[in-house]
Length: 159
Ligand code: GDP
Ligand code: MG
Image 1 (cartoon, protein in one colour):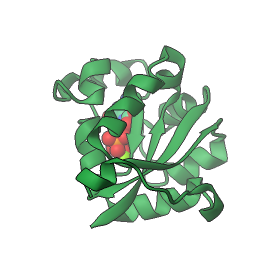
Image 2 (cartoon, helix red, strand yellow):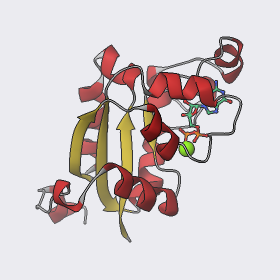
Image 3 (cartoon, protein in one colour):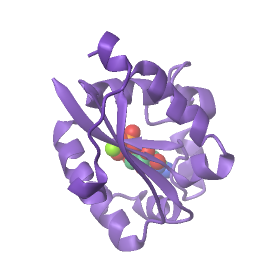
């Protein structure tokens, strides 16, 4: 039941200065950040990370967005963390993302608006969509030496 999932604060989150506010939401939920680093993604890394989307019409805009500035990559560990993190992140399209979620609270635009401008929809954060994606992405972004084992105080109450 304890899973690892991959999260990235996209360039818009870094540039808007809301990294801390977003990371706080995960800390409050009691999940454990076991790896974290700032990386400037290049085209090759973008194609590996978004391999499921490379052929899609919105991919050029997506690649431009993810390579436009540094991102903060994290590995988050917790009980059913893949699903839990996606719940905190909210739906992909900010227009419909539920209030209280990261995407619902920090953004508002629609697919139609972003598509009209040939841009990826800016929604601040990436989180692995399922266990298989999480395993692939944790391995793509982090080496074993970059992932840490330690105890949080939450483990007494949450784990
Ligand atoms: P996620 O797993 O919720 O991030 O969503 P996806 O894996 O489906 O898409 C990856 C990213 O591509 C999203 O977070 C958006 O930034 C962008 N994106 C997805 N679908 C669309 C779309 O229809 N139009 C545009 N412009 N961008 C999209
Ligand atoms: Mg996805």
